[in-house]
Image (cartoon, rainbow, N blue to C red; front, top):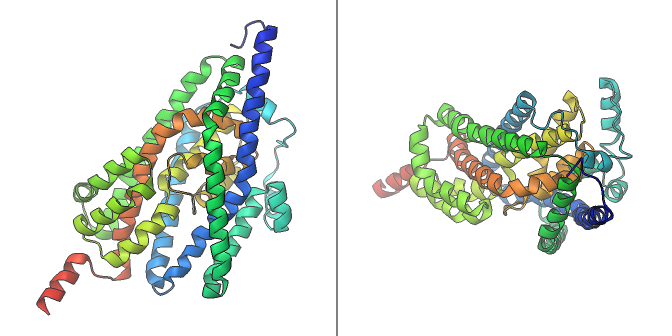
Length: 399
């Protein structure tokens, strides 16, 4: 513990923990760039398969962007209000930030630097790990694939395979993840005091509270305002999918149940659910975006870094983009969390604190992710003008 006299054995232990933890962090950095690039491109390019229903997917995109914007705003606001980790200033993160430019810039300087780093040579961005430049190039590439249609189908297949290959490598890394996490935690415990435990509990409480607020207040209000469906009726029809999401922590694994509940219990047209639910499992990630935005501010507090308003907006934007095409698997947020932290120069070593609490929080945010998909189906059906399943069946039976 901090404050105890260092012995040769303790110093050697800290060195080994630093070495093992450092290798784990470097492995994540190694796979991050190809994973981020291909996941965003493939996630956006998948829209090309649905070019015949413009009104549906445009409404889906607007809904997803709106709800994720609200979720990250809730996360950022709560983090600024309750400020978990404020004043702790962990020495471990100071070491990780060594050599990082943390000079406070004026608004004009920040905007100039941000824009200057946004549109750069994509190969240089990929080589240097310039996250925001990679994101922008990925967005343009994905949109170009959508516009190009079948002309670029071979390139899309290649990028899909690279994405799946990156996920396979991630699977290998996750085999050694427990060892890497233990090493990082051992170093953290050996060099810090017990005040970290209290602030971690506070952070978990803030995340759980804001996630529940978004799932129990914000999304039901949007649903009622658009469709006039009561929250009780919605949760009654959606409970089977929500319970499955809580148990599996995977929106992809829950997808068959989500489709069945949305069609049979909430009476959404199969044409709507068949598009919105699979797309939402990769695009509409309210709970994940909220968590990542709030976690970035928590890490900034632990590192003793003050993020100005524009930097917080950048965190929000990155948190939303990071969710596009992210695999709907347990703890996938860890991979996108690396991207969010690097976007504003925060230490990736912070996942030593975030990973042990990630799984219980992942169950809750997955429920909100799936809930957002089901609310999205009802909202899209209302705006698209497509009749619900019951009306279609009644009309077919009377004809």
